[in-house]
Image (cartoon, rainbow, N blue to C red; front, side):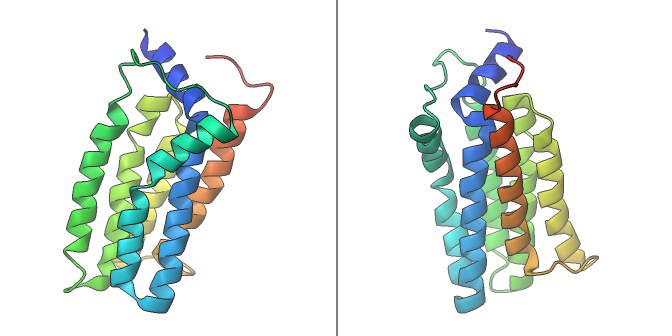
Length: 182
């Protein structure tokens, strides 16, 4: 299987990554709502534990809502998302360590961890749009840490909104009838 064929297989199986990004956006929105009502600690729990649902729920949506078959077991890129997720979890752990000392940094640091995680998805899906998604999510985190730009609703809501927009775009690109075949 060539790299292009492997990317096409994953792109097909996971509907361009759109369903997973959509679930992630919903998790960030839920965390924003919990943060507003209950504070940063329970909101981070929503983000972390809700994040564990992103892959399985996104995969189920791809399979049952979009009727996609699973990726090929021979696909050499299959483990790359998991490998990059391990680094993201380390970034989330580092963010969590800030809860008692600098709670205002927790979600911006989480945004940086998630945003940089998306950079690998360009290699997995073969879609440069993931670089833009990753750059925007990372920028939300960095700008929030340095307070370089006011982000209406805060970084948690901003990341969720960005992901929902990209989820629609990624999904649309994957299901549009005039899409070029890989």
